[in-house]
Length: 292
Image (cartoon, rainbow, N blue to C red; front, side, top):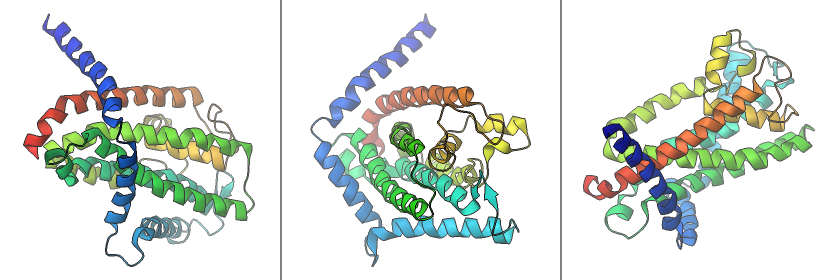
C-alpha cells in the first residue's frame, strides 16, 4: 500500500507540474524576455565591450583547443576529422557545448542568484529558469550566425541538411531548460550540490565528444557509453547537420554508429528529464522562500 501511495504521489506531482508551469508563465512572457536581455547585460556589467565578452570567451577557448590538438599534440595543421579540417570539426562541436555548459552552470545558480524574485516579488519561480536559459540561447544564436557565416565563406555551405538545425537547436533548448527545473531548486537547497555541478563541468567537456569523433573510438564499450551522454548527442547532431551532410536518422558514414539506439536513448532521457524536473520543481518550490 505504501508503494502505491508513493507512486501516486509522484505522478500527482507530475500532473500538477504540467498544469502549474504553463500557468505560471501565462502573462509573464514580455517580462521573461526582458529579464533574459537584462541578465545578459548584467553578467558583463562594467566591461567596456559588455555582452561581447560572451562571444570573445568561447572564441578564445576554441582557439586554445584547436592549437592544443593541432600544434601542441602534433596533430598537424592539416589534420582532418569527419572529412573536414579539424578546426571546422571542433568549431561545430564547440557551438552546442557552449550553450549546454553555460546553461547548466548558470541554471544551477539562477534561483540563488535571483532570490529577490522568490522572497520579495510576486514572480513565478519557474520563469527564473526560463529567462536564464533564454539569455544563454541568445548567445548561442549569435555564435551560430558567426560559425555559419564562416562555413559559408569557406564554401562548405549551404546544404539541405542544414535545415536540421531548426530541429536540434529548439530541442537542445527544451532539454536543458527542463534540466534546470531540477538543478536550480536542488542547488538552492544545497551549496554542495551547486559546487558539485561546477566541479564536474570541466570533466564533462572531455566526455562529450567535443574534441574527438565519438563514433570512431577504438573501444566499442566507450562508444556505447557515450551514446548515453546528451551532450555527445547534440555535438554529433550539429555535425551531421552542418558538416557531414546526413540526416539524424542515418548512421555515421565514416565509422560505426547506432542511429536507432542514439535517437531512442536520447528520447527516453528527454522524457525522464522532463518528469524528474517537474517533480523536483513542484516538490521544492514551496520551501524555497524559507531556504533563501
